[in-house]
Image (cartoon, rainbow, N blue to C red):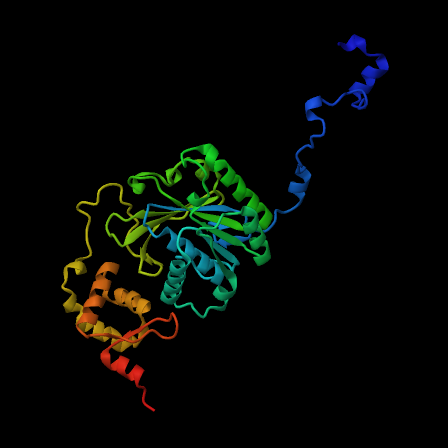
Length: 377
């Protein structure tokens, strides 16, 4: 068919873009709606919506966030601490939280009783058991042994008003090999839909590939297909420290904000705190790494300092006692626990019975414990 097959009037209507009845819609597009589009005048004449940050300068509502670390690096504790800090509106290892957020912690790996113990251990260590925001804003879902249903999670998120949903770990959702990009596509799509429909940020815990994580760039972290890395909006990684076994390098990557400098963090037995060590990642075998010089001092030589510590701070719950004792002595977490056990065995310190059902034992000198047991009338 050519131009000569049309009448003059038909040709004129085509030129005038006014011959709708004559131009037939292609069969394969019949009934297909076009994508919704935004005209440039709308974007140029209106301001974009305000940001809704969860962690300042790192991620916001609707984002997808990865937490990646090697096996046994306490990724779950990191995720739980993130959830608690967001719920309370308190800084997360030096990163600001603008306001208290509604948080769902969805945990699928640890038995409920052990998750309960971990929560109490962290709350006790951080001394936040009485925080009203934490009590109101953190919802824990223990789904170990329960079939995961994304619609049920979406329903829960909407009912709770969730602003952050943490899923730990992501491999529990995988049906297939983690090296297969097609096995990850449904999960990535599910997170996109969940973020879009609930308005919450989605954070998920993922493990590193085998080998030395510090030898890889942050862009290449995470086991299996790299589709997760390409689709996430922010990433938090933990890497073993080159100089101290108790420390890790905390590093972030994000799509929309300025880069943050890596820092060194330390797990004190209950939660992570910032360390003054420079953020030097372990990139190979740790032979020749420097050690804390206090590690080689016999435990008994610290007993005098333990007594002085007790005199200064008084009775403390066990976990808080160990954390603050380590901060005072400057010892590693392992060395602090060894000194603590040695002081108990030598009767330098005593322990009370647990306070109430599931409560903590209190630690102090024998005199402090006796006065606690038999207070003066």
